[in-house]
Length: 419
Image (cartoon, rainbow, N blue to C red):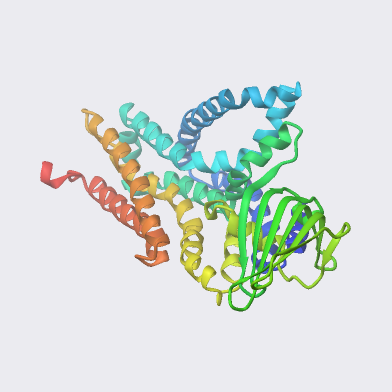
């Protein structure tokens, strides 16, 4: 099914990155193999490691499951009236949330990992089980290795989802809602695109899903310019259909206006369909520039960067695409980073529990989110390198987590200045 979707996508988006889109079925297969890999790892682990894995999975079920349930309930309370318009509330709800699930599961995963680690480690510390585990002669880092392994597993899962399906589901939320209500899913409204080669400005009022498979666009206006930038002609059409087979545009209910210098415009209403087979623009070009770049997966981002880098209008956005491309790789690593600094802060072996460390953990997680947002804004504006913008917060907090775990495992105070 994924291979068929890739072929349909490439027919409608001929400028896409064919190599990365071709990897989609294999990445999806890798995601579905992750539970098997986790089960094999559990089977060949020691008794102590399996005990800690079970403790973490039970905490994950409570914390991550609770986060997902609360999010879905809040979102459903705001959409229940719209989903019930068809008279089949259960069917519409299932249709909507099953398609929107990749975005929900991925977005909540880092916070689920954070709270699960805090809950699990604090529980085994409070019950003195961690003290008994350390009496086996293993170091603290070796005892906690299964939690790092779980963080790595979550990172791989998030990386696979973030490759294409999670950003796409987030961008298609409104379209999924329309389809769940029995309507045509609208991909976007009021898209604007300028073709530098053809010197044409496209403005489309409504672009539905399936526009690359013959579903007509609504409210199309195409303005053609002369070489000197003056107005040459303007085309109005209620509907427009693009054929991927012969690369032609068919316009319906058309009104044309030809503009000549120092003369009144001439209006013509040609018969339907009004066909243009010399225009090289494709719907994919109109759609990609109209979509929010935060809702594009790695194949779409790569295809947009490689489309036509000589055009000035695309050069201005190249840095934004590049920043988001690096962010697709850096964001999943936050699952592992949360484990790195949440584990030493939640872990204690003394009789007195340090409740303030839990608050510090949450504060650090908030600062990671804020710093990431600031770094992305600086990267998209061109003030810093895209790679630095995407990876610097991750590297900084990973170093902090490693430093905290080193001090915790050696028995020294976490905060030297505070004693």
